[in-house]
Length: 428
Image 1 (cartoon, rainbow, N blue to C red):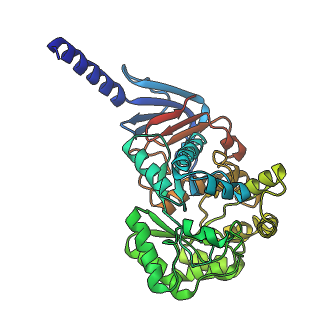
Image 2: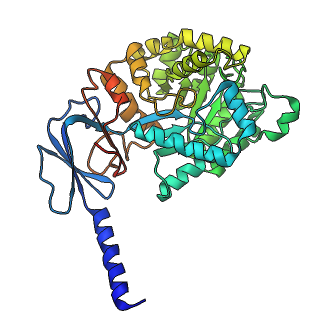
Image 3: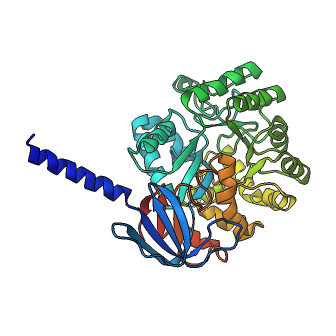
């Protein structure tokens, strides 16, 4: 290479590096910097190297070489967090079963990336993914961390754990001759085997452990408890020993209580919580992730195809639709900590903000619903030092909407600006 050519290449590289390092000045008309506290008025948010440098009153002129973004007519908030997603699929019922046996892991990996981008563009800059097969989300998480692809920050559970014949036994409902195609390393029976199952997921790279104490709506395994005390305790104790939090899928009341007694960090779905159980959860500090918007996914699929689900599962879906929201109406007033989660994959990816409207419908003020999707969810996921508020030193996860979400949470369904870790995803 000639010296002049080398010099040109170096100059180009330096110019590119300088451009990447240039700070960004966001001029925001209104800022909910710390959800639950009074909003700020006109503010300049300075972002550099993917992090928030400062929040300054008024509109500070961007210096030469910096990028200015005009959000003066917008409300700016921290990036939202969905504590319960399944990025690997947007299909369910009979359609999901067909896809499982007719499409391979490479194509499903592409679907996983696609769903991640739908989620990110919807303003959810962080998700907790609670179960998939084949390591597709684990791979996406690593690719995002390496900067190979865009996507939300992912806290991943690997494969969800249950007992044989339980909600996460993928063989349930399939003909015997197909069972050999389905992995079973996520299943456990007895305390020692459950410890093995946790260690296996941690060895695969899981950040959090998810297991089911009850059957499930979509699996047709019923809603009763499918696990015994020593198994649940072994799962939680092992996960905690490895520094992992535990999310527990539980619908029936006995299974919810079993998970709380075992020391679960969060109850997912919690469809039949009563006052006694809510008080148990509040005392233990157990989070509740209601996943109310699953009903949207059910209703949409059934409207398009009344036979979208097998009859036994359809009966459970009808029950779930009828009871949705009642647990939140009990738990929230009794002081149970609520973290935002949708079960996206059952509901539709990219429609994650639909949950806000349901949280408000069933008793949460808009400010508390927003707090559930930021501060509370960040604490549950263990990422509160990185995200959940707009403060100096934190990752530049920043969104903007038209209107006032404290008055009407539905405005959160239409993102006008999304920045994830300093990178602009949706431009104003």
